[in-house]
Image (cartoon, rainbow, N blue to C red):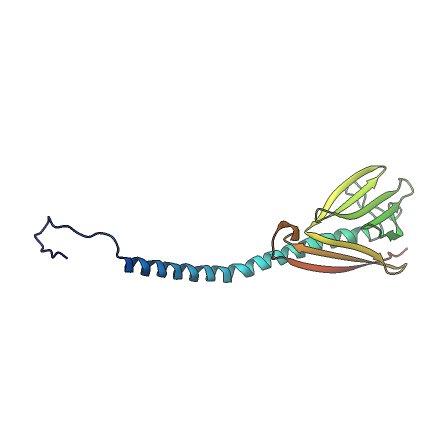
Length: 187
C-alpha cells in the first residue's frame, strides 16, 4: 500500500471496485428490482383482470342484443329500415340443431333464414335471403353456444365466453356463462 501526499503526482493509484463492493451493489440492485417487480405485479394484475372481465361483458352484451333482436318476432328490413308487422315474421319454434336457426316469412318476399354458429371462437350470424348469404361476427371469445327447446313456448340459449381465448396458449383466462331464455313472441 502506498501513501500519498498532496504534492505527490507520480504515484500509482488504484481504480475500480473491490469484490466486496461489487457483491454488495449486486445484492442491493437485485433487492430493489425484486421490490419494484412485486409492486408492479401487485398493481397490474387487477387491471388486467378488470380489462378481461370488461371485454367479456361487452361481448356477451353484443351477443345478447343480437339474439334478442332476432327472437323479438320480426326481422328488421335489410336496408336498415325496421320491418312492419307483415314483413319477415318469425316462424316459431326455432330450430336448435347445430347452433340456432330462425326462419322468417313475408307476404311480399321469400323466406329469410338467420342462423347462429361458432367459428374460430366467434359467434357468427348468417342471414340468407333468396340464396344470398350475409355473414356477420356478433361476438368474439365465444367458447360455447347451444340452443335447446324447453317447451313450445321457450328456447334456452347457453352462451359461454372465455377471455383470452383458451386456445391462444395462455394459462390464465376468464370464463363466464350466460343463460338466455327466448320466449315465444306474441301473435
